[in-house]
Each structure stands twice: as C-alpha cells, then as structure tokens.
Length: 215
Image 1 (cartoon, rainbow, N blue to C red):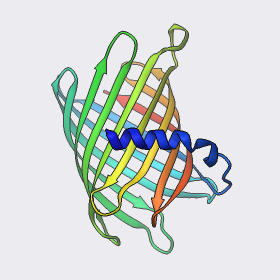
Image 2: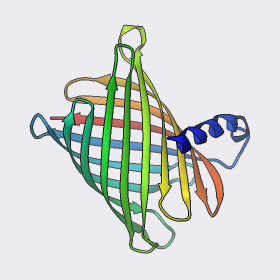
Image 3: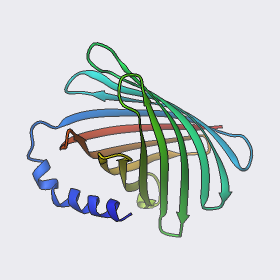
C-alpha cells in the first residue's frame, strides 16, 4: 500500500509534464465478460479483452480468461484463474499463459463502495523469460449522479514483477458505470498509464469499454 500511495502521488505531480509530450501511445480497450452464478457462494467468470493501438493501427494484445471465485464472507472472495494472452509482435506473435490466485474485497457504506483486488500470477512465455508478478488495484465508486445512472468511479492499479525489475506498470482510472441491471452492466473509462521499458517510463492514454453479462 505504501508503494501504491507513493506512485499515485508521483503520477499526480507529473501530470502537467506528461500532457506536454507528443510521443504518447493511444489505446482502445474492450472487455466482454460472462459471470455464471453456480450457487450462492461460487461464481464462474469467462472473459475476453482486446487492446488496440490506434496510432499504429494494430491489435496490440488479446486476453482470454477463465476464473472461479468463492465468497468467504460478505466482504471477501478468494479465487483462482487462468489467462491466455497473445501479443502482436513483429514477425511472429508471442504467447503467454498465466495461472493466477486472487482475493477480492468489497466494502460498502451509505455513500460509496470500495473494491480492491490483489493477485499473484506466474507468467509463462513461449519466447521470453518466465517470472512471477503481483498486481493490486483499488476502486472507489461514488453515488449515482442526479439520483440515477451514471455512477462515477476512480481507481489505481499497479503491477510489480517479483524480480529485479520491480514496479513496471502504474495506472490511474476514471470511469462511469453507464448502465447496470441484474443481467447486464456497461462501463466507460479512461486510463492514464505509465509503463517501464528498459528502465525508462513511457506514457499511454486509454479509452475503454466493459460489457459484463450475468446469468
């Protein structure tokens, strides 16, 4: 949490510098998920996610996820998942496979909702070095605007390689929960991302859409 807090402060302090840069990448993200309620405790989740780099005109990567989580109490869920990733790399696509263990925390009060996920994953590549990684996020959801949709939320997300590289991705989110019902949810969001390549940080801007179906 201390690393997370410090990174957020540094990002805010350097925002005015980042907005003056002309070499930032711009992405469109799209996620489609299906949540299957197996019983009153267990949920099976299937999802696919695509990243499109608009300035290069290419699909940057595609994810496919399968996960199972169990409710431990009213605020904690534990789960395991598997993710397959395909990266669009010059000459030949790179493939990655990630077994994952995660915990999800939900805290509610009359004013807002706090959602946080902590995840451990091991990353197997067909062409790159394997390594383990820790991912953390926290999101704050605020009451509906004007007594109805949309709901505003903000959040942060960090990725830390558990080797000498350490922290290598940081993200700040701002989004709107545009629609929510018993079977469907739609989110629109913006992401301010910093990613480290060869000890140098580069910035990306993202516009994303989440479509979540539940049965």
